[in-house]
Amino acid sequence: MRITLPEKKKLVFESRFPVRWGDMDAMGHVNNTVYFKYLEHMRIDWMSQIGCPPDAKGEGPVIVNAFCNFHKQLTYPSDVLGKLFVSDLGRSTFDSWCTLERVDEPGVIYTSGGATMVWVDFPAQKSAPLPDWLRTIVA
Image 1 (tube, rainbow, N blue to C red):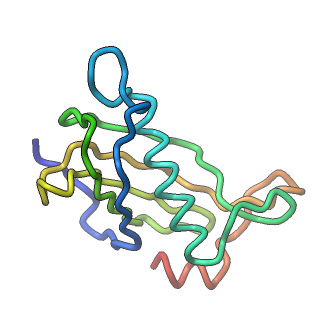
Image 2 (cartoon, rainbow, N blue to C red):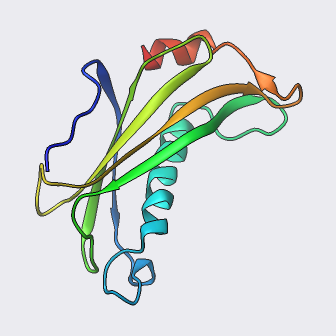
């Protein structure tokens, strides 16, 4: 299946991780809910790498929309290469996109997903402009 990501996207992060036995369901493949955890780990690891760990007393990203497309079944044992892209920069928002492929099958997308992220002032409980340092990374 051909995956269509936005034309103007930027690769910002890659991560490798194993499929764990506990990720499987009774059907012998990774459970659909686990894919959302994989995508979440990709976003959190990227945000931590760029110096933006979650901080409920300050500002940070909130997911307002998330999706996942299942193209092929991941199974145990396998190692996964996740790629995180960003696009569609707005005043307080940007989109993140992930692809997941098996390390031993480079270029074959097993899963694609993404999320719209809004930068939020948590104490004020409202959106805030993206900080300049993040805008530079995402742009």
